[in-house]
Amino acid sequence: MWYFFIMKSILRNHKGMRAALTGVVLLLPVLLLSFSSNVDTYYQEETLSVQIMDVEITPEVFAEETNMILETPEPPLATISTLSGAYNPEQTTQMEEESANKSSEASPEEPSGASDDTPPVLPEPSKVAYLTFDDGPSRAVTPGILDVLQQEGILATFFVLPHPPRNVDDIYLRILEDGHEIANHSYSHNYSIMYRGEIEDFTEDVMQASEYILDKLDYTMTSFRFPGGPMGRPKSVIEQRREVLAELGYRDFAWDIDSGDSNPNTEDKSAEAIVSRVLENTRDREHLIILFHDSSSRETTLEALPEIIQGLRELGYRFDIIRNHP
Ligand SMILES: [Zn+2]
Image (tube, rainbow, N blue to C red; front, top):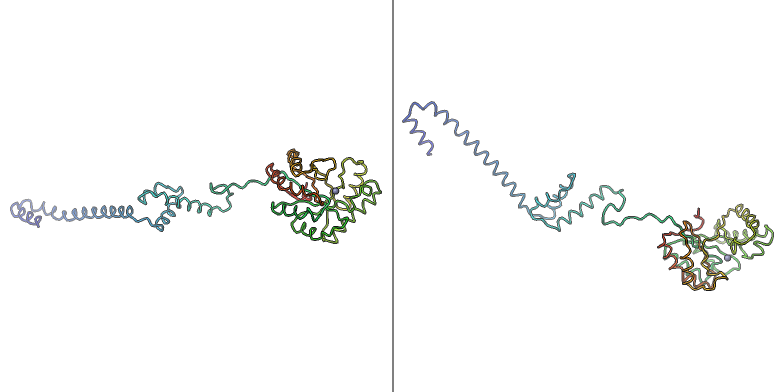
């Protein structure tokens, strides 16, 4: 109103300026409109900014923001905190968890250990211990040994003696069902037949044991152990018998450590003595064959077994059946 009043009086009193002022009059509204428009834009931005700062941080909003940020190459934690208003440690923790989940989803084949939360997967030990049990099975000791091996989740080898018959078919079956190896230790365990007789006597004895197990269990043995071991016997005798064994499909295995549980020269057959003899004589061998017996009256062998297994594990050994020996 005041604007038109002033303009009117100017035009009345100073007719000479009429033409010049007309231009200004026409331009003024345009200038005013332009200024007003700038103010509106500025105000809208200010409002928008305030809205972002005041937005309530519900879990949904937070998740949305987190995802948005995670899609950028480097998650800027500080930016999220600023945008969200107050810094909330709980929300940040949640976001870090989501971030961890997202990265594990993104690369499922990444080896474990990349995340701080996952324990690293240790490589399998390269040293192998082969627990071997001779002269069984016996009802007094073998089931207990099978229980320990099952509890420990490890495999072993049983060099069995079919003669004399001991009514232990169920134990033979369990040895196989548990995944262990049954191996040939001759049929008679008679040194005269094995080493002092004709080679045919040896061959027949070994084959008798093979057929006994094959008939009973439909299982073919491929590992052999000389009764009493090959050590200290004439070299030619052992070599000749090894040729027969090879023809019959056998490899023969002696041992690296005698636990002493059945050795007539070993006085102390207590569980403690058996544990010590084994664990103190490993010599860090890559492949370690250990001799035990599971014939009846070898209760201390069973008693010593859990501690021996634990001790060997601590020395870096895993366990296997002897047919896997290289
Ligand atoms: Zn034996």
